[in-house]
Each structure stands twice: as structure tokens, then as C-alpha cells.
Image (cartoon, rainbow, N blue to C red; front, side):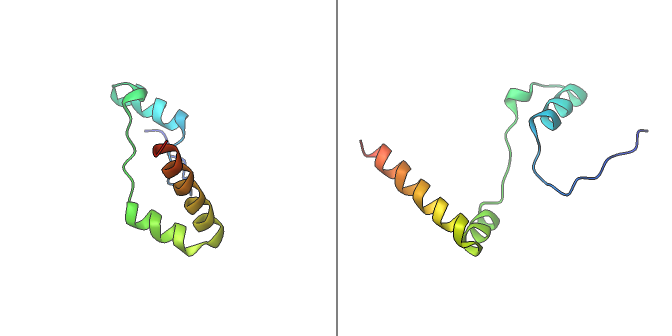
Length: 67
């Protein structure tokens, strides 16, 4: 068995997804990432810059949807 490399990041890159699809079958285009929305919201609210960016994005999305 090959030795596994350890990564600190928990986010899969496109090459990670392609490798998984190749190894276990399926298409990388069918990949759907499952996220913990509560944890993401807590992280966003914890950091002022992320909170400001998120607020601006939500405002932009809302204004685009109302047009």
C-alpha cells in the first residue's frame, strides 16, 4: 500500500476530486461537497473581514435577484 500524504487543509482540490473519481469510479463533474453550514457561519462571524465580505456578497446577490 502506498503511503498517504497528510494535508492540513480539509478542502479537496480539483485534482483530489479527479483522483478519487478515477480510483473509485464515477465522474468528477458529479462531485458534490457536503459542508457544515453552521460551522461556516460561525467562522464567517468570527472574523470581521469575512463577515464584511459575506454581507457584501449577500447584498449583491439580493439586489441581482430583485432585478
